[in-house]
Length: 320
Image: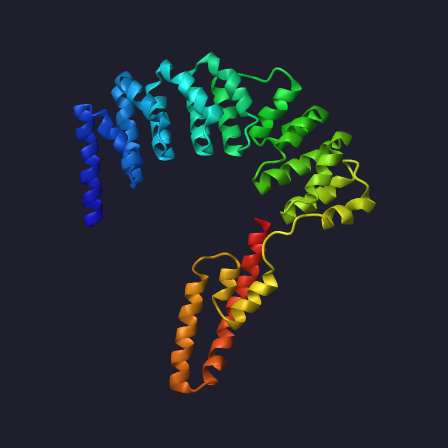
């Protein structure tokens, strides 16, 4: 209840700042830890209209991505054409994918024809969310691809894999380019489409993906390999060349069975050592009360359950 009262008071502060047209005060709230206050500050800045445009453009250089995102969203509400070029710059150069994503979407709402070219380039962004935002913005601008290659980039960005497959061979190049996406699910979908298209130009790409660290991507690459012209006899050789990633699930399970907590540390969880220390301390105290062997008879059935859980946890991490 006190937290709710505090939140209401802070939200009313936003109304006060809005009434005073205190733009700087509202901008300071863009990175507030409470999301409701952030959103209300964005709405308040947007409601102030064009008088807030220049101060908001000034904070697009902020080192804090939350401030940049909030400023972009407020500019999207204002729809001042002066923000078009700065937003294009962010779309093309900002290191934060969320900033580029929001910039792309807002460029669509500004309805400025000059944004079309940069948004078309955004369809090739290395981040799938930015590509999707660019495609949605181009839809707002009533843009439609002029050739099959542009169509491929556009529908890849929208994850419309059926349409990409219908485009056929002209989509092979764009698919191969986007195949470097960090998201395993996207790589998996692209491999499936490459296999369905069956263009011989995708042979090297399919061979490369056979070494992918993600097992689902590798499996779909195996299925697509023959259609892409990869010699089936070479599959074991390509698969064996994949980089080994992740930790051994059996090693993690055994560690947690013998010394619960160390298995989690092995998997990279920082709190694993704390669990181990707590377990060891509890074990020692129990030994003082019950003797040296009885605590182990109690502990091992429990740690066995954790060992099983750790095994599947390690497997899940390997497929991510």
